[in-house]
Image 1 (tube, rainbow, N blue to C red):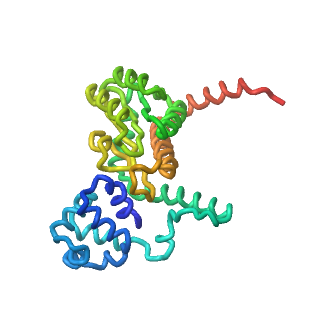
Image 2 (spheres, rainbow, N blue to C red):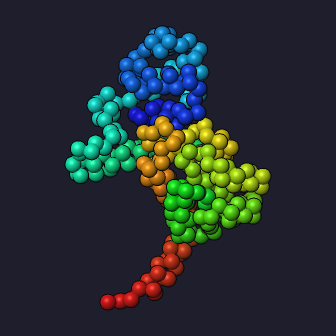
Image 3 (cartoon, rainbow, N blue to C red):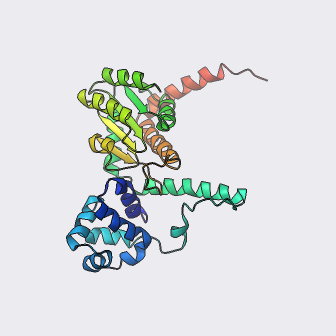
Length: 284
């Protein structure tokens, strides 16, 4: 959990007020030093009121500044913390470029795992287990994760569906009911077509599980369950290339938990799927 506080701040950053972003920027620059400050000392250094610091801590998911400070104190002090997600330099060797890319993905996974909560996972799994139809929604870059989710859950006894076209997704949403479940994937949580689909789902009272990078995005605030996929990015305009691996990991985690719950049925389905695939292969 060492990086959970910084990951949490990053997920909220794009939707923070300018004052709260100012506080966040100061914390990002020197988290270990900030962890040793009282609320009054931090307020003085940033140039804001203690009330602003208190509100900031609550905005990013903490009950109070003391709880926030204690979590911040767990942030590793070694230099590796400051070298994560270093930009690739044109002068880097190909090996260095590959290492930095792999490290960015590894850190995205660690950051995402660090803020997972048992109650959110329980809610998500229960919604999926009780779904008559499990539908995946994702557009643009998120369509990759949505298709992977659909492909993965085909191995369970749960009926699942996914269509890449927006108009078809909207029709798909119109047919779902409160007895079904939707998994919506959006890096920004602000894609207008995604939100149009979300409106249709909410009108039909369909339980929505959101996988997004921003905890205060429009999608996150209206979803029934939110699973954050994090990377060291605070710019919503970024393409979220490192969050894709985290999105896929979240989907695989949900699949594993659901498959274990439905172990007997899942084994039977997977056996039939393997037989069907094996029959298409020509022996050499």
